[in-house]
Amino acid sequence: MFPRRALVGSLLLALAAGCTSSGDGGGLPAGSEVLDGASSGMKSVSSTHFVIKVDGELPDVTVKDAEGDLNADGQSRGRAKVEQFGQLIEVEYVLVDQDLYFKGPTGGFTKLPAALAGQVYDPTAILDPERGVARVLAEARDEKTVSADGGVTVVEATVPRDVVAGLVPGIDADVASRFSVREDRLVNAVFTLPSGAEVTIDLSDFNEPVSVSAPE
Image 1 (tube, rainbow, N blue to C red):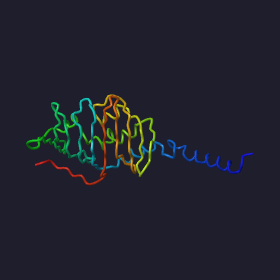
Image 2 (cartoon, rainbow, N blue to C red):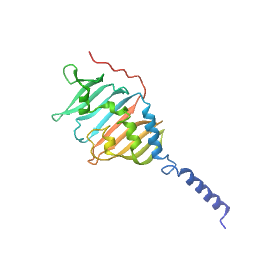
Image 3 (cartoon, rainbow, N blue to C red):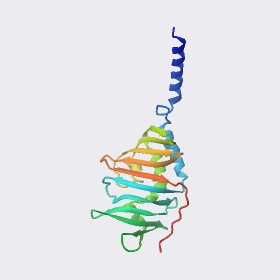
Image 4 (cartoon, rainbow, N blue to C red):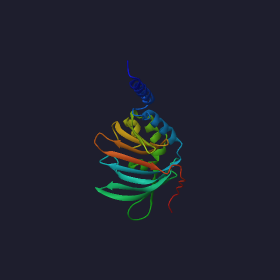
């Protein structure tokens, strides 16, 4: 017969195993549940502050980093570093009422059709439910939670190329991804291309008022 202490220990181990079986192991929540919750949560976000960084070469994308504010109505303002003729140029932009205003290192703002924003990088895609982070989170596959600490849950997954391309142009393959989620909000996403290039998106200041007007 098993000693009473060994029997109690076996029962405790069995109970612990049963309690963690619904997650990804080690008591962590299931990655699919975390990303589904974040996808639903991001659909209700009306505005955010964003920071985008590109490490390495991204085909057909000249932006190396960008930072700004945007709202779910497709309005945004901020700054970006754009590679032009082998040099990095910092510019300001305002996107409002289907118009893009662009200001280089010298001179004032130049008005362009908003459609041209997509040829550089369109930050308003982030909150677009059809091509932004909500869709990326919902359609990620092979999800695995790798950590949960300080209120932030980190999930690794693969995102199909046709899904992530709506958010990050120039991607032509499925990408390994890492998502950091806090309270059903995506706060960080890292996309690693097969070439080794990485695109990082940080989001904060959710639902803070963002009002954008055309520059004078």
